[in-house]
Length: 271
Image (cartoon, rainbow, N blue to C red):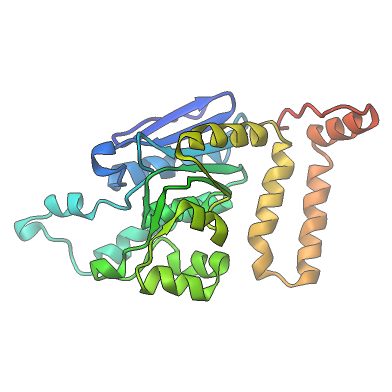
């Protein structure tokens, strides 16, 4: 059995086929650090081959989602002659943010993100990389990289233009614009914006719907959507045919066809 484990700053729970990942460092607005990023990556890597999982829910404890990476915390551990060598960021990112974001995009399980309060830097990117982000109308999405004097990371300059368009991406990355959860939904960053008190319930309802769906077909559809921008039409039609061949051999396909004939709702088991 996969061994999921909570770490400091990250609570990990598996329940009824749902992997629940809760960023839990409220005194730092649930900022990520080396340990919690490693915990997220390990959990998602396990999830990739966990036959019992059907969906993932990513949230933040208490009033915020994630205030980004805790650079200040790392700097307090780097003093005197222990400063890292030149190139340390370039060497470290492939095992941290540059591993985490592609995992969310490539994972053949639906990912729902519940966003309240601050979603900053890589925190905003986690929501962007999820399949569905349910945001509080009062949430704040912010990419303050240039304000801190360094360039964007975690795929910001790749994902944002594709989702919100180049003009809005420049507003967010070059002009330091903060947007509300309501605006995030209007721009396509969030799936929906709801009153703050309804975020958890709305996200739970959505993740339950996805967890009750045909998991194999959902995963293959997610993979097709991710691959489409890199394919021409003929190649992608071939990929769709391959995916249909696989999904039509699943028990859930047989259940879907049987339910159609019997004129009832299907009871998918994620197989």
